[in-house]
Image (cartoon, rainbow, N blue to C red):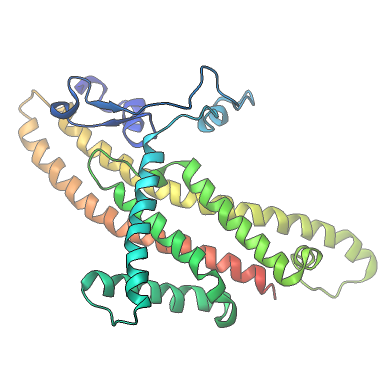
Length: 299
């Protein structure tokens, strides 16, 4: 273990998706792994990225219907959100006033996202239509981030597959709501700002600006996915490096000084990650609301 504690493959293996959960050896025996069953996985993948460019081919995993730990964590996050908010909705439907810290905290978060994120970005008249989407996005990202702080679990938002899927949902909501509000032709036409240009210059510049704006539309949502991925992956990777100092110094006299320093550093970084979990959920929701507002109110 000490010899490979700082190897990139070993460090990334702790923060990337896999088909098993790493747990203490007292729980799962010598290997320290709980392997997930694969009822749908075949001998050959249904599709595989083959561009010839190794970095891209390695990032995009084959479509093999493999059950991974991030999928399990996403299902756990979805179940937690469903159980908590279905129960909360039933209580609110009775017209009772908020009771208890959890109820007050959740309702305060819902109201804050509505009044300070959605309505300023989208507009008071249109924002309420998008609240179910924005609330779901916020709490799903938040719960996935918080699950990443649970020992031996993992952060599903540290995978491009997860953040990319969330960004695609946002992209579909943005373009769909824009075309519904302005019409299909009107929405894409509105991507080019109004400019008083003479005829020959307009024929030259308008197609160029339209292409740039469409490219920018895709880039904004790609960055939306990468921003969340980078922040969550980087934090957990730094945490893995700090803990790796303990393994690297094991068996030496320096271990007695490195171990407490690494533990204190890991605790401090975990507290920072707790703040980042809320911050990144807020940023993702805010940018999603901003993009929706730009689509339904292009001017």
